[in-house]
Image (cartoon, rainbow, N blue to C red):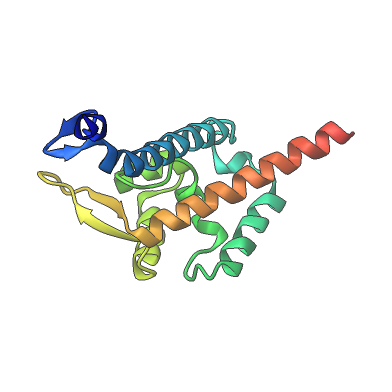
Length: 164
């Protein structure tokens, strides 16, 4: 009778439910929190102006200062159009040239500078002679930091315009 009362509610893969349930609940909660937070961030990033040329020069300078403070070497204001959301990952040099309004030689030179700083790799696209950008972990951090600075500047500009 006592054994029946202590029997597990169910088994999953020969593991009693009461043994794995305390581990699964926090993982599911963290997953849902992260998903909600990422969706909120994507909505905020969608509010950023379409191109970096639409930014106030003071905002561009603030971003460059933030990069220096965060110890991102080899990154200057000239790189901002390339790092602007959605970032360069998976794009070819030609696509980035069109998106940034610069010639391909300039874009390739800037990308090679970022490659020296180990922010990305430039690889030939399979079956093509186009160079394609692949961000490194350090590069994803740089793009996320750039988004953070842009979002902060956007919030400050909304806050200052609401105060006037």
